[in-house]
Every structure is written in structure tokens, then in C-alpha cells.
Image 1 (cartoon, rainbow over the protein chains, first blue to last red):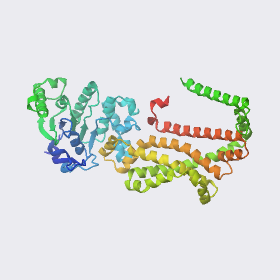
Image 2 (cartoon, rainbow over the protein chains, first blue to last red; image 1 turned 180 degrees about the vertical axis):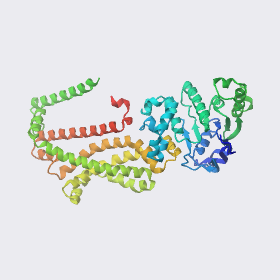
Image 3 (cartoon, helix red, strand yellow; image 1 turned 180 degrees about the horizontal axis):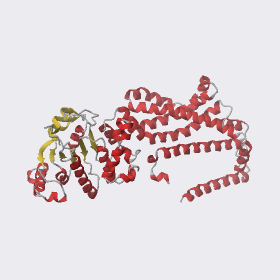
Image 4 (cartoon, each protein chain N blue to C red; image 1 turned 60 degrees about the vertical axis):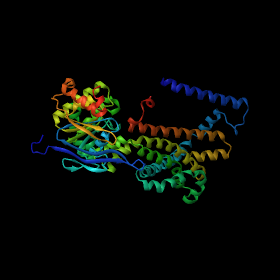
Length: 264
Length: 253
């Protein structure tokens, strides 16, 4: 973390996103979103389906443009084609015509063949880190879902972006693989100090992984409350048994289901 | 399992030929109406010396027509799929061009382009440009949104996205078009030879039938069909070699 006071990384101000539906009124997916994310934070966007959490993530990643408001990363306004972000999707989204290694260097290939060539060593190092160096030359189809998602995480890291955005990256995995990858990602976060914005609909995942939880609500999609997680590191499976974890769980349920059902 | 897949069709072919042979002799069908397989075989042996020359002539038309169609159809398919204006301006015309029965315009083409290779190339092009073009456009447009999100998230330009995402994704579609195209090329080449040529398998069939030499005509047709199958297999093998990921595990067996 830089000590120069430049701690603020992502600033989202008064952002709204509307979609034309053909009806007279557009569909308001997000309304009046204000959020500031510091460097090195691990922010979880959590909420019921339809709360716009994935929409917000797509705006941060520069995949869509907001209808109103603006999003700045390190002071620069996000536009489409913004490439200083690493992204991980719900599906691994590995290109079937490339080997695992070629997939990992793909973001470099987009810039130039030479950069792709230069990044091969780095790609192998990343694959080594997640235990995939043996399969670097294999096609994606020969890997399990969990291994594919590991490769996708390596791909998001290849250009060493300051910011990672992840759209429910573990939701398609089985429970055990999911846990393994959660801790792997926590380790990557601890080692690299990258800022991570991560969408989930799993409360335990949010509590376990985050330094900050943004609980969102529906119609229109908005931020209900932002919670500082305030749990010690390193996180382990026991972290979820801490009193603080229980408090967070109850508070999040209150925010999502309403006051009366939070205690259930 | 593999052996079974060879033995079964071979057995049914042998049975069919046997029935044909016996029927021709048993019912005393004259050879100018239906020659027995044995007679077709001896006709094939008779023309064996000149057959290679005709095969090469047809093959030249097929391959150059196919190459021309591919060179025109793939860029056209890409253009149609990525540019709305191009698509709106050209697609209806291309559909119309494809709807024109080639056999009907073939005589016109011969008047326009003469009796040489050019006419046969144009006829072949007319028969096989459409499936290749449509397959290309379909493949480009079929690119999954996740792949496009991926390229966008890496800041890929439109051209880079086309090159590294859309074209590779479209490649198996294009090969489906090419497999249809290569067999249609054979048809186009034969239509061309029917009308203009002094050599080639199409010419051989026409000249044999005018002499009521059905055995020779059938032998030529079989050669033509074999050529078509071999060409199709070559395209298939190129796809297997070049895009192994695009061949599903089941069809590899």
C-alpha cells in the first residue's frame, strides 16, 4: 500500500444505469450509486438477484457505460476498452482454440504478439502458483471446471492489473472446489495487495473473503448498506465461527430479507 | 467395432450389386437400358487409359472454382456479419443470386464468358458461394457474449476482436460451409462440362449417353462420386488437423 495518501482507488459517484425496455419507462437497473474503494481492499458486492450487482461490476470493468454519473479508477474515467483491469467471469470463458498457456497470455496477445511472447514466463509462473503448470499446453476442454477457473484467474493477473473484478467466479463450482479457490484467492490477495471487487450471492462467501461488504437491494438496484468486515487475517474456515461473522450474517440477512426475518 | 463399420456397408453394397447383376441377366434387360455391374466394370477398364485425363480436367475446375468461391465468400460473409449497411445493401441481392437456377443461366454464362475454363469457374462459383458465405456470417454472429466480454475487458480493438475471437469461433462453421461447398463445386463443374467442355467427367458422361453407352456413363458417374467423397474427406481432415478442438469427441471415433 502506498503511503503517499493516494489510497483511494475506485470512485463511483452518482451512477445510474437504465435499460430501454420498449415500455414508456426505462428499466432502472441501478440508481444513485456512490461507492469509494481504497487500494488493496477486497470488496464484496452482495444482494438478491435483480439488485444490479453484476450490472455495477460490468460498469466498473468498462463492459458497459453508465447512463448517468461517473466511475474513476486511479483518477481516470472508465471508458469502454479500459484495459487496466483484470476480469474473471462466472464461467471460465477460456477460448477452446487456445492452449491453457495461450489463454493465460491472451490479454497480452491483444496488445501485441511480442508482449504475448514476453509474458509466457510470467504465465507459467502464475500457472505454477495455482498448480496448473503441468497442463499449460493442454486444451481447456481437458481440464475440470475448477482448474479452468484457476486458469481464468491467472489470465486476469497476467498484465499485473491493480484492480481485479470478479463476477460470481466460484458459483458454478462444486462446494469443495469452491472452498479451495476461495482460500487460494485470499492468498493471492494477501500476496499481491491488489484491489478486488467481487460479486456473490453467498453470504458466507462475502463474510469469509471481504474487507468490505456492499449489501445491495432491488427495485431500483441500489446500495442498502456498506459494512466493514473487521475480521482478523489470515482468514480460515474458523473465521466464519467468530462472533463478528455471526453479527455480519445477521445484519446482512436483515438488510436483504427485512428486520423481522433477519433472526431466523 | 471399427471393423463392423467397414464390413456392414461393404456387405450391403455387395448384396445390392449382386441383385442388380442377377436382375439384369434374369430379366434379360438390354445393356442400353441398364448395364449389369460387371459390364460397368469392363467399361471402366476400357476407359481407364483416358480416365485420368478427364479426372484431372474436372478436378482443375472443381478446385479452382472452390478456391475462387472461398476467396470471395469468406470475406463477404465477414463483411455481411460485421457491417449492418453492407448486410442490408447486399444480402437480398445475394439471396436472389443464389435462388437463380444455375442450369438456367449456364447457357447465358457461356455466351458471356466463352467455352473455356472461365465459364465453368463462374458456374461453379454460382453454385457454391452461398453456403460458404452464410456459414461464415453465421459463425461470426454466433460468437458467445462471454467471449466478446472477455475481449472487451482486455481492451481489444474491433479488428483484434475479429481476428482473435470472432474468426476462430467461426472457423468450424466455415468448415461446415466448405464441406457443403466442395461437393457443390463438383456439381457446378459437371454442369459446366455438360455445356461447354471437350474434356472432363461431365463431358465423358454426355458423350457416352449420346452413344447409348450407359456402362461408360455409369463408370464416369461413379468416378465423379468417388472424387466428391475424397474431396469432402480432405476438407474434413484439414479441419481435424487444423482445428482439433472443433471436432466433437463422438465424431472422432
